[in-house]
Amino acid sequence: MKCENCTKTECSKKQKNDDKQNTSVDALSTNNENEEKSEFHKLASAKIFLSDCLACDNCVTSEESVRIFQQNQKELFRILSLNKKCDISKHKVLAVSVCPQSLPYFAAKFNLSVNNAAKKLCGFLKSLGVHYVFDTTIAADFSILESQKEFIQRYRQQNQEEHALPMFASACPGWIRYAERVLTSSVTPHICTAKSPQQIMGSLVKGYFARQQNLSPDKIFHIIVAPCYDKKLEALREDFYISLYNSQDVDCVLTSGEIVQIMEQKNISMKEVAEVAVDSLFGEIKEEDIVRHDGRRSDGYLEHIFKHAAKELFDMDVKEITYKTLKNKDFQEVTLEKDGETVLRFAAAYGFRNIQNVVLKLKKGKFLYHFVEVLACPGGCLNGKGQAQTEDGKPDKVLLSQMEEMYAAIPVRLPETSMHVQKLYQDWLEGLDSKKVQETLHTKYCAVNQTASSMDIKW
Image 1 (cartoon, rainbow, N blue to C red):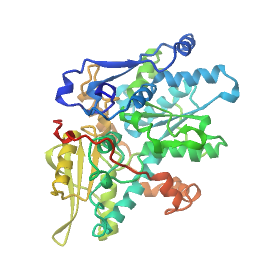
Image 2 (cartoon, rainbow, N blue to C red):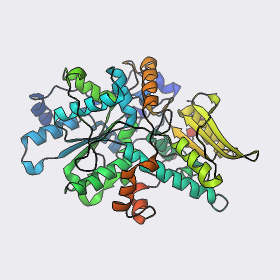
Image 3 (cartoon, rainbow, N blue to C red):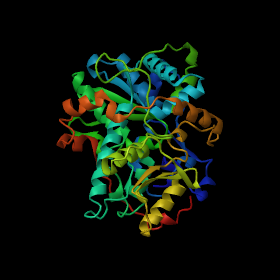
Image 4 (cartoon, rainbow, N blue to C red):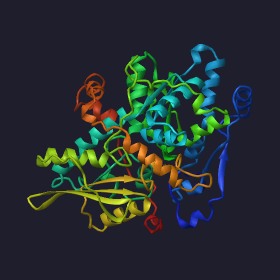
């Protein structure tokens, strides 16, 4: 499969010459589309440009390509139309989960606070016919807590286990796809097994929430609103599927930009939209103000794991973290010293140029880091190509700067302090260290379809 059908976040210089090419695929049949036109605005077909591509020839199969392009706005309107026209027994409960890094985009785009943007977005989606709108922060809580736990285990086993350290973060699907499809098996064992927030949110909605609502998972249509296209690929993973009900944990991923496109094509102004409180997974309780994790441009894996490890392993309380910029602003390190010795060395590597350098050092045996927070997008998740881009596909630097300021202003909440998380560990997952925790919150990453010349790519 050629690279035209991939949805990666960066491309090589060779492919950038072909940026003007794009693939447009209608996700629905002509009959369904004609039925929907009478009630909804016609939506533009999904367009994925080569500038969104990772630059490998074998990273997406033909089947995946078709399913990726089915994840567009028309899927949302197909379900809305079915709910309005079909027998009630065939209706779907529409649930939308919004990533925290998407909210600053809506806030900056429409000159709102992040809290108001969340309520306006919720109001807009419910005006379309969506039943529930959730914030995915609670899923990131679980992902971070499980990552912290795994890092401590790996650190203590580093002398017994060959691939215990370093540990790479597993939350970014662009990085995971690159590691599994391009890199060798010498890298994938180092990837943390904790599922990403999107994967865990899928389990929460189709597992815990479905049970609370007395619904089977296939009766819920679950949409994720995310900053990047890579999340569409992540939703297709085999371990993200409930075979008993023939149901994906996430049925469709829409980027923040695709949501704005719906607003524009329906000629809806955010000023006209009513503010509606974001829903909670816990019955009639509504979410309060939006919170985030202690990371500057991400979900905060590096900072949370670093502080937790400092306390757990060396009995040191770290309040503030000092980043040291290395080759560029997207490659930084954090160290912890005790008695004149460096006992922890963490790094943040964003963008594929930095990722490739990290991987090369690992393969050459010149690796100094215990943990690396890896993100495919330069600048982090806020700079996902599904939101922080101009019409010609270039980064919108002014908008991104506003988003970074807004994201930094969101109050920080430690995952350990969430009472809902602690309750779910006991009531849903049967304890902190249960078999169900491993089955529900963890997965495996394995190298497949390795490409011999992959390390020769120039990012």
